[in-house]
Image (tube, rainbow, N blue to C red; front, side, top):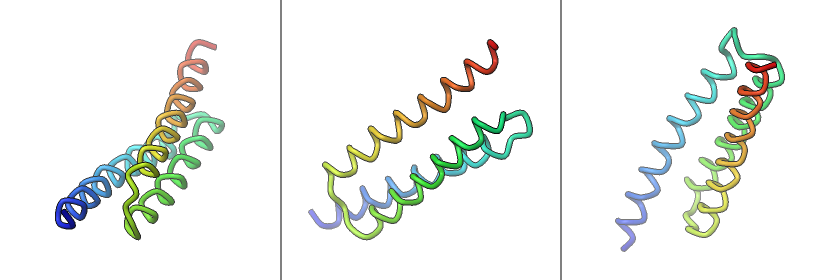
Length: 87
């Protein structure tokens, strides 16, 4: 059981790192508006917190809460992107 948890933790950390890279790319894209960039930087900070928390211990309920918050933040960032493109 412990090995499965460690494997899951490593997989999550790898995926979160990829998400961090995507958020960084979006934040530093010259076409990203300042308000959007600010949201992507906030997402990067949150991802860093989540990665740190998961690397220290794994709590499935807490991980689900992190991902729900992350999903909301990304929807917000993409929503602002869609709105700024139509404005």
